[in-house]
Image (cartoon, rainbow, N blue to C red; front, side):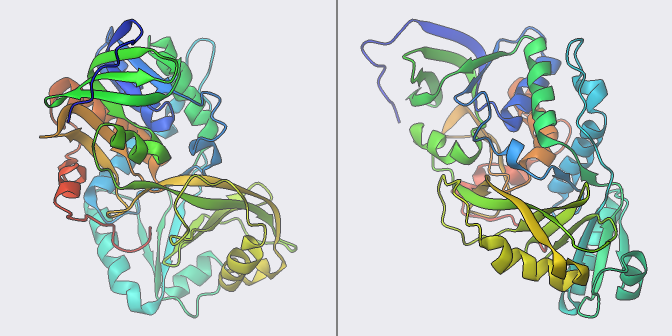
Length: 399
């Protein structure tokens, strides 16, 4: 597993930790490393520092505790509290962190045949200290009079969940990390030199050669490609998804973030609504083209069925973004490649949950690098070992 050093490499530049990917995950890793170990030499490599193609600015900004896996619930509890208090954590003298947090809540709804699944997840969430309300159809109708409930079995409302401005959160992390001494390098990793069980150096498109004690792959939708440079199989692929902003032709109540088993997901946004329906069968690949008929064919029937006033919905804008889809099980890979390249860490594969879990994931990587183990949340179930063993660890229910 050794790639030879190029004969004509440029002078080697050392760091303590190199982070591949300067999006919200990579910046969170850098922030927590700098917070826990002031003076650590941290370099973040990002080929698109304007974030033209990054996933976070194209995201919906949703943050929820409604998961089934305890690890995801725990990451949400920490991360949502961090995002709520972003002004305290991330403000700098020249850049106050204002991320536009809206405590609009999340509502998960299921048909009668899936009530037991929702109840089980609700019980897990309650046991972990979450504020979640299990509602029958009558209670749903009372709270949401515009919603059709005759084909529903139950819903769970998490009233303290919400959403933020994802681009503002990304920029706040960037400014804060830079103020803490993190170096942000505009470049691209084109080769990874390895030897024994270590990453020895990174070769960049510019010709530079970087070395470090620890390397983190936080390349988002490109993480699988980066891993391959090191000889590592990481089942993370780019999955195109659409976000739509649409309005209603008649008065309608404000809504929380509504999600169902068919992957319909939308919420109130200003005078309209933002969201869509994810197609998990979409061909994988880097693709930002827009099918302008998708809203009318797929999204409009779904939202109008659930909320009849949206029969009069009109799509005002559509944009495409990428999920870093974990093909094994939809859950991220967080931690080192133990037994492979011991100093090569992965923080990728969040499958649409990257922004909401970035603070917890960044803290976890920092703990692994600095202490060699999880201190705050046991994320062992999300390690690379399950990929090697082909042992999926999936969410149960609504994704």
